[in-house]
Amino acid sequence: MNLQDMTPQSYDRYLSPLFAAEDEALRAAREEMQREQLPGISVSASEGKLLHVLALISGASRILEIGTLGGYSTIWLARALPPEGRLISLEIDPHHAEVARRNIQRAGLTQKVEVRTGPALEALAKLAVEDRALFDLIFIDADKDGYVEYLGKAVPLLRDGGLILGDNTLPDAVLNPKADSGTKRYNAAVADHPDLVSILVPVLRSNGIDGLLISLKKKR
Ligand SMILES: C[S@@+](CC[C@H](N)C(=O)[O-])C[C@H]1O[C@@H](n2cnc3c(N)ncnc32)[C@H](O)[C@@H]1O
Image 1 (tube, rainbow, N blue to C red):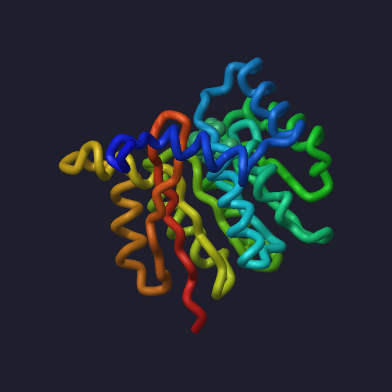
Image 2 (image 1 turned 135 degrees about the vertical axis):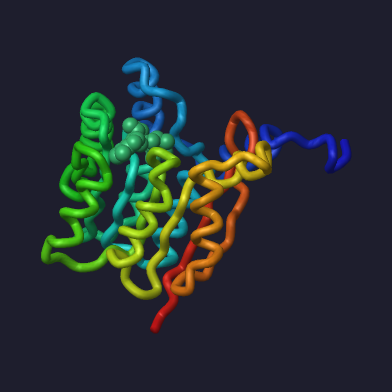
């Protein structure tokens, strides 16, 4: 077989079992999302592990997630937290939030994770006035048309040297190069941002290739 014959699935079949094997809690979370008929739009296991490793590398003890769904990526991220670490996840859909809370409880992470229900922009405005430490890592994975606004709210909530991760940022740009889209506007805003140094990394999904835009907030 040549390199050109390889599919994203053939790569994922090799690396996911080796580096991103799911344990009982992650498997149960996926099954619960299917039973509850949530859309199948979680990160893949290998992208979940990438989020986990990035959270460990950045030494994150405070994580913000925008877009919880059933809490699958939440579990990967929260497992990278130290004992006193905390994760806040924002979700507009009460049914998604309820499924996520169950999955997070089954994973033994209730003490570390708070799922806040409501529109992310409202929650971000509240976070901006709360008297609390800045976040070390912010994962943006909600409605794509909101990404540029989320970026604007996220940067001031992030410590210098912290990470902003933007999910699903590659396919639109490549599949519909002429069409406008929320993720393309996000990519352009990030690429131009004077406080961020960034790279868009392709990630493997069971149905193809997606992208995670990784941005580091420069130290002043
Ligand atoms: C792609 S899914 C998140 C997947 C999840 N991060 C994972 O990988 O397991 C996007 C989620 O964002 C939520 N969402 C959409 N618009 C939102 C908004 N304005 N505020 C908060 N959450 C929103 C959706 O209900 C959905 O559950």
